[in-house]
Image 1: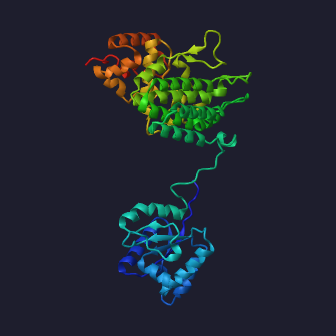
Image 2 (image 1 turned 90 degrees about the vertical axis):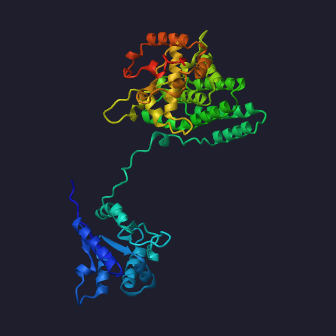
Image 3 (image 1 turned 45 degrees about the horizontal axis):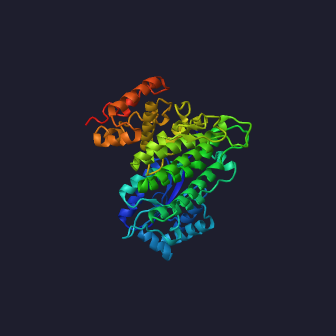
Amino acid sequence: MSEVKSPKVFISYSWSGIDHQEFVKECAERLVSDGIEVVLDIFDLREGDDKYAFMESMVTDDTVTHVLIMSDKAYAEKADARKAGVGTESQIISKHVYEKVAQSKFIPIICERDSEGRAITPTFLQSRISIDFSSPEKVNENWERLVRLLFGRPEHTKPQLGKPPAYITGEAPVSAAAISAKFNTLKQAILQEKKRISHYRRDLIDECVKHADKFRIREQKQITGEMVLGDLRALKPVRDYLLEWVLLESDYDASNEFNEALTSTLEKLLELKSRPEEITQWNDNMLEAQRVFVYETFLYIVAALIKTKSFESLHEVFFTSYLLPDTEGYGENRFDDFTRFYGYSETLQILAEPGRKLSSPAAAYIKQSADRESISFRSIMEAETLILMIAFMKQIRWFPQTLYYAGYHGKFELFNRAQFKKHYKNIATITGYEDPRALELEVRLGHDQARPNNWNNFYMINFLELMNIQELGKY
C-alpha cells in the first residue's frame, strides 16, 4: 500500500461565542487525532503576532492543503460586510477563490442554517459545494466524508476509462422516436374508439419491424458478446412497444381481428431471426441477437396476455401454425408451431461474473433487462411455465431458460388459482381441456417423455409442482 501523506489544514472561523469556539476547537482536536495537521489561531497565534499577516500566510501557504471555513451567521455577516478579522480574512480567501475557481482548497463547513433550513454562508461561497456540520447528527454523518476529502481518498472514485462499447463504435444509434409516435397514435385511436384502428396498428407493427430489421447482419463477420448485447439494447424499444400494444389492445378488446394481427406480428418476428434473402454465406451466430430478442419478446407477449386475462388469445398463440420465412420453409414444411420463437445465446456469457459460467446467458440477459413496471420478471417466469405446460401437453420440445431463477418463487398465480374450478376455466380455455385430470395425464406423459430431470442444472426444480398440476380444478 502506498504511503498516505498527512494533510495540513487551516481553520477560518468567527468568534461568535463560547459555544461556537468550543465546537471549532473540538473539531480541530478530532482532526488531529485522525492524522491531520491543524493550524488554528488558539493553537498557533501568540501574543505580539500580527494576526492579519498570520491569516494571509495560512491562506496563501502552499503547505496548507485545505482551508476549512466554519460558516455560521456571524461569519457570513462579517464576511459580507468586510468587518473585523473575518472580513479581512474573507477578502484574502475570496480573492484566491475567484482567481482559482477550480481549486478545492477552500471547503465551506456549514455550522448553522436559517429558519427555512438554508445553509448560511458568505456570498462568495454560496455556489461552492459544502459539508454540513449544522447539528451533532450531521457532524457524525459527514465526518468520514471530510476526512476522506482532506486525504484525497473519497469513498466514490471515478472508474478507469474503458473502451467504448460496440454499439457506440459501430454505426450511429437508430432512434425509436418513429415507433413512439406510431404507438401514441394507435393508443389514442383505441381509447377514442376511432375507426380504422387496423390502419394505425399496421403502421406501428411495420415501424417496429423496420426498426428491428436495421440490426440484422448482412455480411460475414465475427460476432462478439459485446455486439450481441449492443444490438439487444437497440432492439429493446421494439420489445417494449410491442408489449404495450398487446397490453393495451388485448385489455380493451381481444377480438378476432386482434388475434389475427397478433399472429401476423409473431410471423414477422420469425422473419427478423431468419437469414436475409440476399445472404449466401451464413452462420447461425450472425443473428444471435435477433434469436434472443424474439424469444424475449414472445415471453413478454404471453405474459401480457396472462395479465389481461386474454385466454382465448393465448389459445390462438399456442395452437396456430405459423408461416415460416421464405429462407426457412421448404416444400411441405412451410409452417411450424410456437417453438420457433425459442432462442438461446452463447456469446452472452460475458454477463457472467469472473470465474463463473451461466446456465443460460439468454435468461441472464432477460432477467437483467426486465425493467418494465407493467410486466415483472416473475410474470415472465409465469409465462414460460405456461409455455412449458403446453409443450409437455403437445409433446414438443421447449427448454425453459428463465425458470433457472424460479426455485424460490413458489407457485405462480395463474396455476395457484386454478386449483378452484372457476379459475381452472382459464386454463381450460388456453389448453382446450375441460377435464383437469385429462390435462394432467397429457402433461405428465409429455413431462416423462421430455425427462427434464436430466436437463442441465434443472435437478432442483419440479416443473409439475410449479404448474400445480395435481391440484388443478380440485375445489
